[in-house]
Amino acid sequence: MQNFNFGQFTADASPLRHVDPRVKILAGAVLSILIFQATPGEIVMISLFMGLVILISRVSLQEIGRALKPIAVFAALLFLLHLFFTEGRDIVSIPLLPVRITYEGLENGFLVVWQFAALVTAGALLTMTTPPSTLVAALEKLLRPLKILRVPTQDLAVMVSMALRFVPTFSEEYNRMKTARIARGGDLKGKGLFRKLKTAISIVVPLILSAFRRADDLAAAMEARGYARGPRTTLKELRMTRIDFAALAVMVSFTGLTVMIRFMDF
Amino acid sequence: MITFKDVSYQYSEKTPPVLESMDLQIPDGQYVALIGPNGCGKTTLIKHLNALLIPSRGEVRINGMNTRETSCHRDIRCVVGMVFQNPDHQIVGMSVEEDVAFGLENLAVPSQEISPLVRNALYRVGMEGFEKRAPFSLSGGEKRLASIAGVLIMNPRYLALDEPTAYLDPAGRRRILGMIRQLHREGMGIIHVTHDIGEVADADRIIVMERGAIIMDGSPAEVCAFLISRDNPGLEAPTMAALMAKLKESGWDLPTNIISVEDAHKEIHSCLTRTAGNQQMEHGRI
Ligand SMILES: Nc1ncnc2c1ncn2[C@@H]1O[C@H](COP(=O)(O)OP(=O)(O)OP(=O)(O)O)[C@@H](O)[C@H]1O
Ligand SMILES: [Mg+2]
Image (cartoon, rainbow over all chains, first blue to last red; front, side):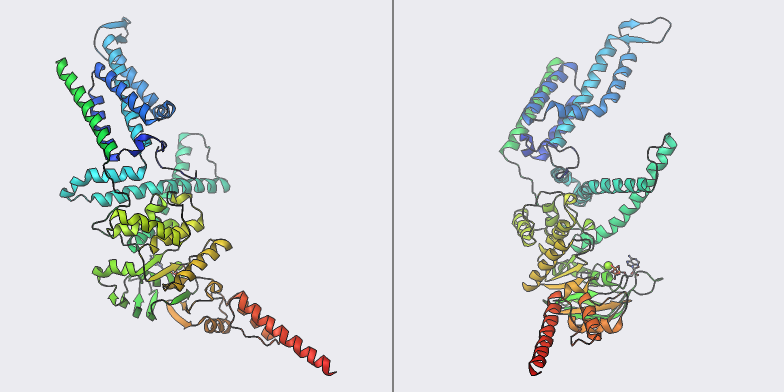
């Protein structure tokens, strides 16, 4: 756990690692919109494009698979829902029972699940190839226009990155408290939902209390190092380079292409 | 120059004051140790040094700046760096370099100037090569060093350290103490809070606190003699001084204001040689 990174940042060697995170976030957002309202034809095109990106990023399919695993059950439900509840031409229908499967349902189910998987894959690609601190910095930059509305974007960025910094600390603390409970004869493998809930609460409550105590100290430490409202800089400034403009160009032309095809269809 | 003038501090109206009518002056570049039993107000005192706490009565001035004036706080925090008791509660960055850079980011130093300063600060504490490490993957001693680097980067004139050697093994302790001495040699003022008077034997001055007041302020030797005379369980005299006092009781001609093993060794050795010489002389006469 020497180099534990919060989140899923694993692809340290990926060429996408060096693309400006702002470009990646924007690309992800645009891609999401395209995916979200894609026709079956378009989704094939988008998938091919994403396949290419995955190839370039050198993220293994195994890793993508790992990212997709948690949504498998939900995706299956989504599929069945569309399969059974879409009006259209019957494939199978059982008389008397309200069960019918339609061509449209099958198509819809496939499309929706595919869209869902593509969205998750796009998100996974972003987080796998971007260190969390860089991601936070990029979000701060992208949200900067909100400053006009007096949203304290820089403070928000500090907040988020501190939250990320403390995730491992808290998981450590959680494990310590769990061990302490076991050491005192506590039973963690209790059967029954109620027992499980009780055990969880008995660990989580002290964890939250200790977090509050820590927050006090932390605030003092930040203040002592000159943290205050007002302008601040960051160690790593984001700067657009050639590779970023290239990535941006690719993204713009792909989007243009997709939109064009959409209009030609009409 | 740090000046406390008649400083009292209460955490709330209902509780008794934690500091009471305290007067104190610390000149530039002095190495001051602060000792006292648990809860006597050491942490409370040093939090006044960089305006984290503002006195309820009296005033604290740092290089002439009154800590009561909010507009001075940034400057005050650049003059006095503060290393807290628990480094886990001090490290804010997601990596060592980001954490060390935090102070300069707050001062809005341009990015390209920060990187070399981060490297230099890590070099000063002997932590080169740790830039990319996640804070929680560091050992206790390394965390402490990283948190000191994060303070040094702001180039303070004084460094206040709250029990910097707590939870460290002897090697880690020696490393921190060596670094504190090195910084002192380079001209940095040090305020070092500790429970072990043995580790501040070479401070310029030791201040002893009890229940919110300074009860002794003097050189290590003077403080040592004072502690032996008082015999308070919360404020133990250094082991070496206690040993010397016991030996003196049994009739050896030894000074008792000794803190370090080296000094004790020197004194005992010279005492033994003297006695041996005397015995030889007596022997020769017979
Ligand atoms: N935030 C706080 N609110 C109320 N009382 C406090 C607070 N912090 C400290 N105190 C009280 O002030 C007194 C002095 O505390 P302080 O932390 O300064 O002692 P200390 O000398 O640093 O002790 P230690 O050696 O244990 O670190 C204690 O009685 C403590 O209970
Ligand atoms: Mg303390």
